[in-house]
Image (cartoon, rainbow, N blue to C red; front, top):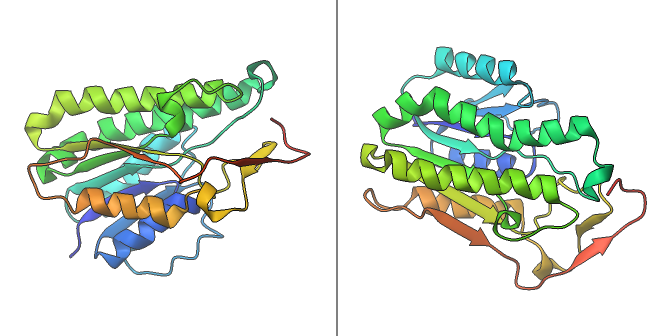
Length: 238
């Protein structure tokens, strides 16, 4: 019986790659996401949990569902799900701002609270997927970067709060990654491979974190492509 893991945003991109990596390592993975129709994971140890993380009530229902299905205390909580909104702050829809805060910050805080007892029993990991934008001013992405900075500060404070329990709290801050984050924006990663990260690269960072010996922890990891370049396109909202 493998260790239990929760991965949010498991339907695509980084979350999908992390889920596949964990399955290869023998974990049972509860993947939380809105729609798994396009997620091609056919593995008996992968359990899709279809709930909307922008709704606090749905987050609580997802946690209750996982509690009924888990076979032992959860060892890994990977708060990966995230949405973006890019452009002048005055042009961002009010509903989108609410969704940003709910998915990127509130849901990780709620899930951490709901599974804290499990994680303390298993002496496991909380891995929060922030962003390099949490570390610097990010014009044209003010609300998005604020949620990621909040997640980073939550992680830092939580680590100091619970480190004596044996729970390891880690924040990963990727730079531009080839995912669907920018689909509604007028920016995207460039075509040159040295200017962006891949979901698999980020998943490999998670692998490195969880393979560290007990008693040590990489509390923060910043992932950057060697070169900086973005492309601009017509038709986006930002």
